Image 1 (tube, rainbow, N blue to C red):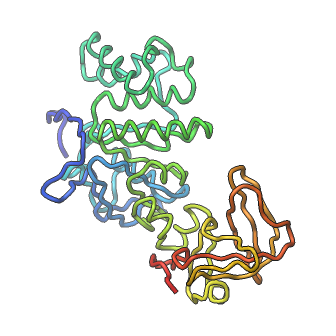
Image 2 (image 1 turned 90 degrees about the vertical axis):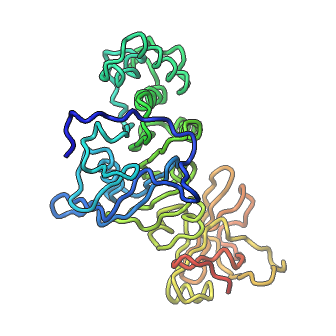
Image 3 (image 1 turned 180 degrees about the horizontal axis):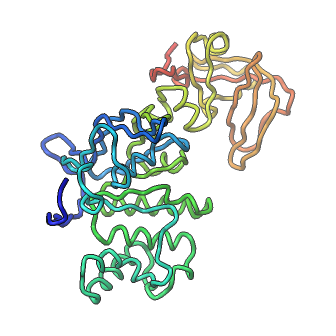
Amino acid sequence: MPTSSMARKKPEWRNSNSVQGNTVSNAIEFQGLCRSFGATRAVDNVDLAIREGEFFSMLGPSGSGKTTCLRLVAGFEYPDAGQILIHGKRGDLLPPYRRDVNTVFQDYALFPHMNVRENVAYGLMVKGVEKGKRHREADTMLELVKLAGYGDRKPAQLSGGQRQRVALGRALINKPRILLLDEPLGALDQKLREQMQVELRALQKQLGITFVFVTHDQAEAMSMSDRVAVFNQGRIEQLATPHEIYYSPKTSFVAGFVGAANILAGDAALAITGQGVQCLIRPEMIKVVPSGVGLPVGWRKVSGVLVDSRFHGASSQLSVLVGDVSLTVEVAGYDFPTRGAQVNIAWAPNALVLLDGSASHG
């Protein structure tokens, strides 16, 4: 174990992906990582590489292992087996304060007796930076997180979104090469969450450092991330871009967890899709087709009964009973047949996805 006498290398901002030849370097690597709590295997032999300068999300339900992975990187937990590399060096052997990472938590963890400027400057104070200099740097950071002029206020005088910006500023002022975000938007209302998603993504692109974002909210992960790892029961079910996760899920768990999905298997799959294997059709890929209207070559059409509808503003979701199977269909607005009506629905060949990850063209 390194001792406290070791000098900590001052981190530098990374404004773009670090490239050696044609290879993008990795900020974090998990190699056979395991962590158990009693009989529960929270992280089960995970291999993972997070690239330098990317916005990476760990997505999954509660208890899937994503937060434990984040805590292992931060040094709040230690692995039972395997190792963690941070910028190519063993990170799991280092104490938390030597890992060149900072963490932003859901509960902000601000000091109520300090004003905003003092909260942001706290990390510099711990390092012994002179008061005038650290306050100037804190004011610069407050401008970056869109809180210029708020330095003299106390945390209790701020909204939830403003407190989250203070927490971000405090984490970034030490110039970490990696920022860990543990469900930081979970306490915000929906409108503010969406606003903060945009601001976080823009901030990450501006700074160019690695963001590792943990969430159970699929919309957050899909809208902000360069890549997403979907966790389930301590393992990664799929690691891919948001587009690939949504349109080419590898397993039924990923298909069902990310977005609305019609998942069919066995006799139902064969009768409705013509495929005798487990498969997926996204609701928005299914079209309601008026009688007598022709379809392009290769499209699949089936008939059913409209049994329910749910209006969501810009779109509506219909439940269409085809045989014994209810399919969810998403349509624009509210212009659709009445309940109980016979309807034809159809989809293009590439709308059908086999859950081994390959698209059907049959």
